[in-house]
Image (cartoon, rainbow, N blue to C red; front, side, top):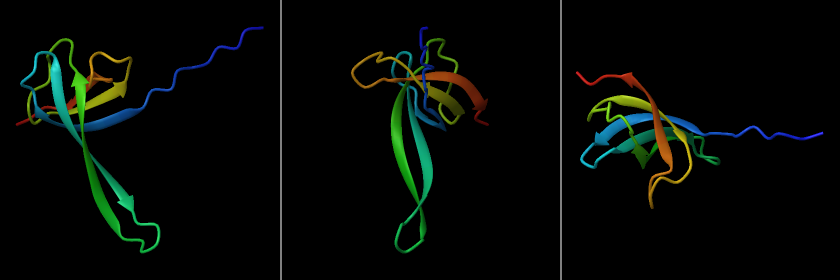
Length: 87
């Protein structure tokens, strides 16, 4: 018998902050967390470099992206869809 492992891909949604690079997006992801001791909720944010093969996202769009193989030194994420277009 062969055991096949299913790949687990992390998924995020965020807002495109920059689209200056060729096929590269800078995406800001905000996460709401709670302090363990004081139970106060706060926001954490992080920027990800996302690979956009078809260059279909613009600055201000909300996109969904998943983890993938390393594309470059900093890109390990690939665009899956544009959730909401910028106005």
